[in-house]
Length: 113
Length: 113
Image (cartoon, rainbow over all chains, first blue to last red; front, top):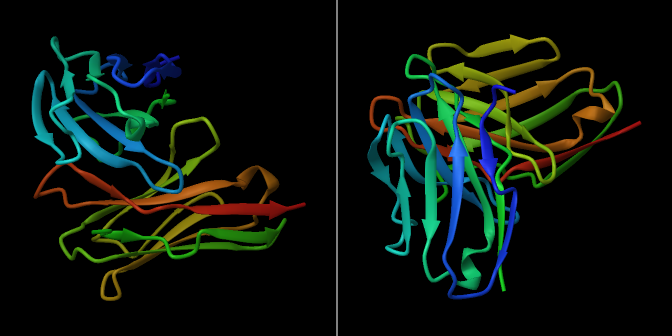
């Protein structure tokens, strides 16, 4: 399978706990995106990496959120001190630098109790 | 502010007939548009795209039309099949001003056998 993969697929946590999600993009895709999707909404942009550099961040990305892509391959998204409002589907997408299309992973569904 | 809008939350169509999904945008800088299909508990799957230099792009049963003056695009599916039942998102980007993709809120298509 050469698509975008995300781990875990589901996460249930208690309010106040920290969670970390992982995304493995399609190989050779140097661009990587994180989105959040809530019920009834489309994906909302969170942040963008080109190789290991985080080039764009949405104002949705509060200081409790941090994303990394240390070697320009996989990426992690960490949420500290989770709140119930963080419950959502977190989607990762990757894109080839010469292409226009983003390809999405299956997402990580987070439920904060 | 919602820069990409899908005003029809749902659409039902008989199998074999045409499905037309609509999308409007407000940002005149958008120059690349995509349609994604999403099944429950999965990430969005790329369907078809169109650049602003074109007004039509066709791929099998799927055709996307772009009306730049009206800031409107539509996705035509013909003939519609039960397997097309899913949520469809349109997305837009302004390639020269950033890497963000903006998504609509989605239209849930049901194709009735």
